[in-house]
Length: 564
Image (cartoon, rainbow, N blue to C red; front, side):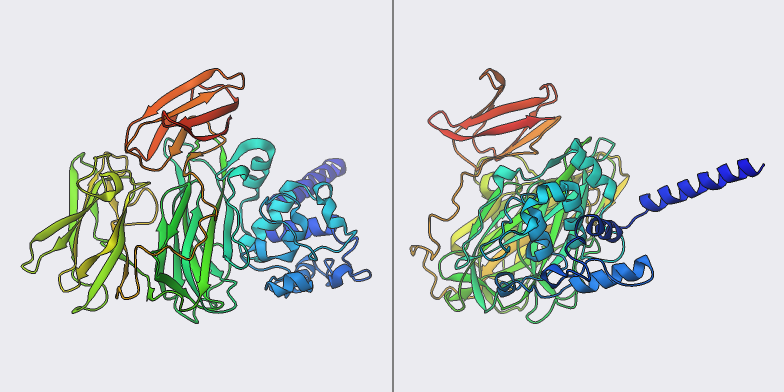
């Protein structure tokens, strides 16, 4: 009986230890990594770089808390890193965290140590062997989630991903180049990991994170480039001047906090270039805060997604632009869409944005819905209350109602641009109409943030005065900066389906997928005006392929495609 009892006790102890290991928080895993790989140099005796990663205390929580106090939001002691405002751990941002930058060693291909950030002969340049990619990713995710002392990203997702069970939303070869220090800065948000939906739908989650800009002085923002990977949208909101720092750092799913106003949003997963008209700019203050809103989608039903998003912010000295560019989201939340297979339309007026008896000048307008929308239209209102000019049709190329009809694509709705601007009297405003079709499986759909809910939003970019704006004047942006052909295949690696995003064109485009011997495996002609097309790749064997895109006159794009 004693032997049996001993076996039972041993079994329970083993199970308890195993359960404890499975239940480790991300913070505990990070501490375990530092004890196994880092304390040989960073301990109370050696203190390499003045950093103790062993910690003191009589319990594990006390030791972890002591180490976190040595890292969390502490100014970098390195002169080069410190001059850029980096911290040892910059909560929410691994790319301004000295800890991650020193162990990165190629995990984030765009994040390279600069001269003077690493001492000569340091072992950190050997971290490809010292730390595995999974260990480095664990530390990166801990920082992205705010370097909290409690749990963060589900670790099993990271383990499966780095065991070969996932794909990157932005392939490493597609990472956009950063602006030079004198031109601006880059926001790198992610990677964010998302498990596939085991059913027929696409898994999707909306994340938010507060970002403190590295601006040391007030600046005009004259251009924004984005590359948003496998995402439904990426939206930047700006906190009011002097606000936002009270919002906890790190990833969250509970929506916006504090007083914010939209700057710009993108719904195209490839490369996007928003260059404001000459004489206009967004106004951003030194050290101001941005709220990032990213709605990511896993298009694979079997593989884990790791999605990165990048925004290049190009700036000019404050006051360079004569006029400030403003943004507004015009929202209608009273949606009620039953599952009856019938179209349901909702209409509403925006008589004014902020103040009546004012005229504004609209530069760009677009729509935002989720998957049930079949059309989106906007009109000007007449003084007598009737509908005036039809200014936007989301089913037409470029949003222009007189252009070719291409069908409403809720994931990539068009944006209409006016140059010169559209004059809008706020006494009368705009009238929007959206149509939805619910064929199930959800019996009733109302307003909400996920793809299983719905939205109805008109987005507008405008100025309040046109003095000093000349559309014939070149912008201050160097035309050589990061100009790329806007062709993008995603996801890559792919499985059952592949999307091709491309600029709108009046001519046809031809896409061919070939094996490595040059044999054409898949051939597709896209009609004029099509901005995105779906390719069925379910019959393609696993392996590497080459894709080419041409317009019958010249090759527009070429690259590698991996089918998993």
